[in-house]
View (cartoon, helix red, strand yellow):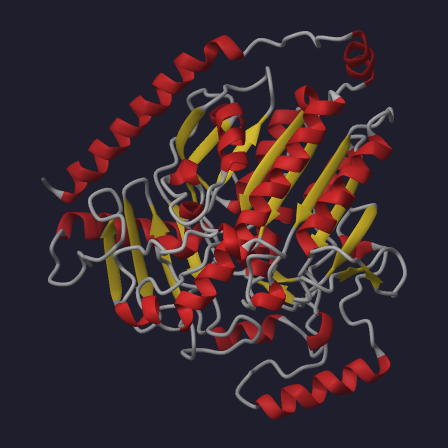
Length: 523
């Protein structure tokens, strides 16, 4: 079968699946009345739904049972959420790194438009954001957890990691006069969030601390994720009887590295399968070495996330808020865990870019359905606006997926999304070092990658889900290659992305890591 026909056939097949799901779900499209007098009274005061977005850090999709996972831990609460809502099977972390994901989530824009292409940089506050937009629509907004949209400890650090001794020197110099480097003060840099229990970046999971409105660490006696769900429930209790609906984001850091006993919640390592299941693209060295030890801790942290999602869902159910609250569960990117002989993220492979994405809104959306539409981090902003009937700013690059969330056919046929890695070090503007730069596209069937060196990779994700056969080698599917190359060029133009070496992006920031220009020009 030719490359073009293969692409077309999978598109038709998936559209048929999606359309069938929409028909099956039509019974759920009506607006049901609340069941109790108290709920009726509460709902009458709320003209718009509450919104909660719980996005975890480094949780890959195949950890979750609903994504054909659940082989090393059970994830009953993620499964329960999927059974009560819409699961997106093609949710893609298009730039699998913390700050770029968060930038896309908050602004709905390509990183080349928001300028958020690397960790530890200040977000430009002079642009529309999801929190500002919901606040302007009458919502109270809150953020809990890991922020990672400020320069923090690297405010005056060199732009390259090559001189690591100078980096350490500058970081220490800055911390002498700015001891609370991970505090983001009230004001524009919070991008529209009013309630704040957050930190920019740290990995003290078992000695967890955060800030409110003063540069003073507040310590918790509980594990990080446990604390954050406590805080979320407390926030909801404070606002559930308000005339204003609330918009809350909760961002736990685990199962992000570091891994080890001292970073794990107590009692969770024992909940991991004794003999770990490994993907077939993991080499024997990783199965026996440090990766094997770290994987156990990774899954333990992930299990704790599932339990805490369950606590949040239970509170919403018990309080009567569930029916009038849109709940989103997702992740910023995955973790390679030895697949393709790699660790961490910043690569275009399934383990790094495939993320869970589930939306629940009881009685307003289908239950237990799946959408096969491609979903990117930029789409959260317009989709939630679409569900809440809020105008979408014209700066947003993402697509309103609210029709797909409701089980309906999209009006726009999105055939591909742009994927990217701008720098070769997660915190610095380097090139061709640990994580070389690349651009790529993802369709429902294919992953295509072009590295800065010119090397190309093409994988058929349906026939080869572990991406072990590179179709670009030997030009095995020339028509498919022709199509994906052309599509990549189009998407790069849309994003004003010149596919530059990582060093060039240092020019986008001043010596305090504040944005001065983007792919659109001067800020």
